[in-house]
Image (cartoon, rainbow, N blue to C red; front, side, top):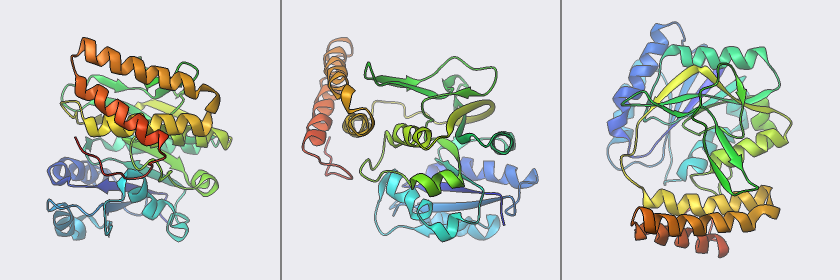
Length: 294
């Protein structure tokens, strides 16, 4: 039985595969074989040749490959295996990763060592760095639900630190946690699922931490994604109501400030437009995947 599995979700990610699988090869060369860490790739019905490329390298790197019949989003895609009790029962730990990343074997070693050493930890993440510059992007994340604000923590801790939530770029979960709380909330579809997960893990009685000794590089998007603005707005309101309904009004006020601030400072009316669209989608209970238009 492998100690852990790593779930990697792909959707039209052909250009990211070389860097990601270079990281996997380094793991194997460093002695972290399939008997320690099993890789499972879930393709979300890509249309750019991603799945066909995965088929070509599957035999070389010996990973499990699953193809979804449709794009299930981040939550639904990962849940294909997260909710497969017969599959996850074979592992102590479950890694979930994006494929637009690069990392060294020490990342996996440090997180496994940490979870082995402290059974109170249910969810752990690494220090996230910029792919191109190495600058700190996140050392865990905070959520001040009383003020309606959240975001990455940029000051680097010297040791393991408790945080509110971990970015879904790369996380490690204890299997027993998944068995207690279930998979990701598919009403979210994508974006803010990691905030929701952090709260659920803590409510189950476990700690959520970042280990700064483990690092990962994550590629930047390069420009504002209005798709992300829409889903993040809708889902932040949903997650706030789900866990902290008392503070939902303040979350609404925060979004109004976002609209005004971006319209004035950044002169970006489209940002405000998609914040409003995300807000109305939440108010209409339009959850899961929606017919989004720019």
